[in-house]
Amino acid sequence: MEQELWLVAGLGNPGRQYEKTWHNCGYLVLEVLSQRHQIPLNKIRFKGLTGQGTIAGRKVILLQPTTYMNLSGESVREAMAFYKIPPQRTLVIYDDLDLPAGQIRMRPSGGAGTHNGMRSIIGQLGRQDFPRVRVGIGPLPANWELVSYVLSDIPQDQQKEMFEAFSRAADAVEKTLRDGIEAAMNQANQKKERHVSE
Image (cartoon, rainbow, N blue to C red; front, side):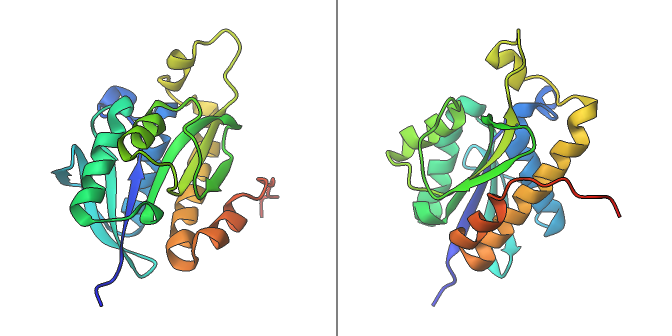
């Protein structure tokens, strides 16, 4: 029997000017996975950049939609349709303003909240029962417009914390593929503890 294929999509905006912005957390987590598992994101397909390989013994397609955030669903839908991947094996990674910066949350399904990329995916699929990893980027600072904030660069003094969060989000993806969504949620959804440095 052919091994079941997973789609792991990290949301963001294409272009150098967006590379290190809050809104590109999904892209940045996918880059962690790409490097860890030697899966280069070098094929242009499904309105995105893709790479194919194995993570935790599972065959995966990594996908960075290059449609810009508010049309991400077109890219995800095309990849799912081409490979006949069901929603329960489609894992989406994205930034979430409702979570404190650096916190990770996993859910097996749910609404889009204020996130245009997730709104696009749910709209294109006509359903919301697919797992997701949310990377906290909140709260919205006082006197900032939502769009200006999410498209601003992650400040120097928060980059270390956020890159640790990307690493934990990548861990959550690996755990999902290895042990299932429940086990991954138990691990990822614990409150972030301050580790005493060795």
